[in-house]
Length: 511
Image (cartoon, rainbow, N blue to C red; front, side, top):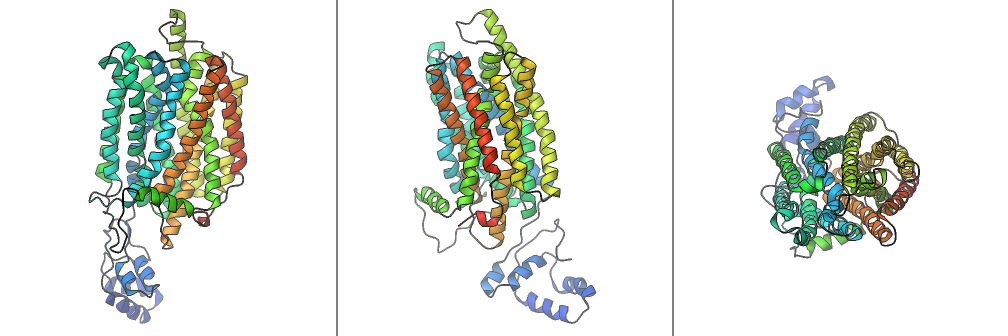
C-alpha cells in the first residue's frame, strides 16, 4: 500500500501538519488498518513515498519541497524514444553513402574517405556541449524538447543543401557544396540526437533504466530495416540522394511529432544562489564533471572506443566492402557498364543483408531485454560474448569471404551483435548509476555522461576513417578495405577482453 497508482496526478507535498496527523492515526490502529487511516488523513494526490523521504530529513524546507515523480508506463517511454528510429534511418543512409556520394561527385578515393572525419570530429565536441546545455536549459518548454525540435529543423536545412548539391550546381562544382555541408549536417544531427536518451532517462524510474536502453536498441533495429529497405529502391543510391533525404525527413518529422505529443517536461529552475553562467560555462561544467568521474567510468569509455572502431568500420564502409571487394563494382564515371552493374548488385546484396541484419537485431534485442529485466546476470559477462562474436565474423570477412556473396551477408548480419549490445548495456549501466545517485541526493548530469559515451563512438570512427585514408594512399581500395576490417576485428577482440573487467555499481559514477 505504500505506492499510489501511477495514473493519479502527483503534486508536491503540502503542509507539514499531514505528517503529524498521519503519525497519530498510525499509532491508534492495527497494522492491517493503516491503509484506511492513511487515506482518511492524506489527500489523494500525495504519495507516501514522499512522506517517508520528507520524514527522514531534519530540514523542514526539504520536507516541504519534496516532490513525487510521475510513473511513466513503458509504452509511453517507448513512444518518447521514437526519434531515435528516425535519426537511425538518417545515419545509415548518410554513413553508408558518404564516401561513395563524394566519389560520385568527382572526389578521389582517399579524399572521399577523409571527409568522413566530419562525423567523429563534430560529434566529439558537440555531444558534450549540447548535453551540458540541455542539462541546464531553463526554457519554459523543458530542457530536452526545444533542442530536439531546433536540431531537426536545422538538420533538414543542411540535409537538403547536401543532398541537393548535384541539382543546384554543375557536376564539377557540386562537391564544393556537398563536402562542407556534410560537416554542417553532422553538427546539426548531433544537436538533434543528443537529448533523446536523456529525455527518456529523466522520465524512467530506476528499474526502467536498463530495459529502456534495450528499447532504444529495438527502435534502432527498426530504423535500420527501414534504411536498408530504402537503399534497395535504387541501384545507385548516390544518384538519388535528394529523394532519399526527403523520405528520411518525413520519417523524422513523424517520430518527433509523436514524441512531442506524449512527452511533458517541467521547466528547470536554476537555484537563486547559483552563480551566473557565461558562454564558457558549458565547457567549464564539462571539465568539472569529467574530473569527478571514476576510473571505472573511464575504463568503460575505453572499451566503447574499441567497440566503435569495429562498429564504425561496418557502418561507414560495409557497403563499399560489398560493392568493391565482394562484387568488384565501381560507380565512378570511368567505370565500365559491367562494373556499374556489379556495383548495383553489391548495393542490393548490402541492402538484403541489412534487412536480415535488422531482423536478427530485433530478435536478439528482445531476448537481451528479457535477460536484462528478469535476471541479475552480471552485465560484463553478458557484454563480452557479443564483442567476441563480432570479432570472429569481422575477421572471417577479411580472410575467408572472397567473392562469396552469401557468406558476406552472413558475416554482415552477425556483425550487428556488438552494436546492439553496446547500445543497451553500457548506456543502461550509466543511466542506472545516475538514477541511483540522484535518489541518494547527489548531483548528476545524465545527458552529459551519455554524450561522453557518444564521444567514444566518434573516437572509434575517427580511428577507422583515418586508418582507411592512410591505407588508401599506398594501397588499392580493395586492399585498404581488407586491412581496415582486420583492424576492426582485432579491436572487437580487445574490447571483449576489456569488458570482462568492467565494474558494476553506483560507486562507479563518481570518485
